[in-house]
Length: 278
Image: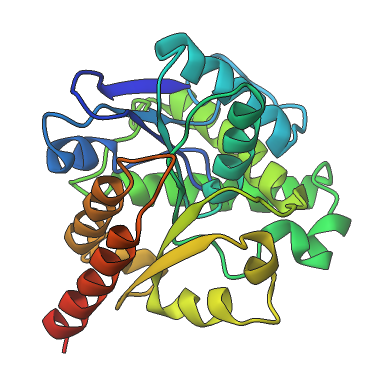
């Protein structure tokens, strides 16, 4: 479900894909922080606001991505764009970018907002879980519902449904469960295009480890590391996150030729952040 947060502006639009439980809660904060010239759209899981009353059929991340691409093209059928993904949504963002590339769209680097150290689908236990088992279903339902309520409890977040409406909360929980299961089943493959990761310090060590998965999945990836854990990078650290996101967008305005100057600017930002945080 695409949400138009700030459709006007002179810069290439940014499409930010939801995280593990189906929502992109920082949309309003991002829209206020990125400035009047940055068009911004949030993509929440399809079905997050509807009339579902039962467990939805399992879908794949590639199916999700194809649906999101159609929504993107409905708002911007031509021209350069940015695609970003929050947490596990980075996996969907890579598939969206791959599909857009096959259609000849001009893309900036895919922006990965603190992706999991190990993609969920590469954890072998996730592949053997029976999501239709009533005990598993109940556990997933409690987990997703709790996380949605936790997101909604933060004053700077907004959620795409009425949090006090039990039917809407139920529907959002089911859609979030579907997204979570899709991410846990997804086996990512190498993405040859450009990517930029904004990482919490807790996840950075795994992300950069040469024997771990991301080194092979993203051969053309730059990264910025912020001194927070995964939760706090989007809470107390959200202002530093958005500063880094703005920098990434500014450095990627030339989509075809990312010159050496952008690498130099990236190094300077890293030095500034190191100085700021001691």
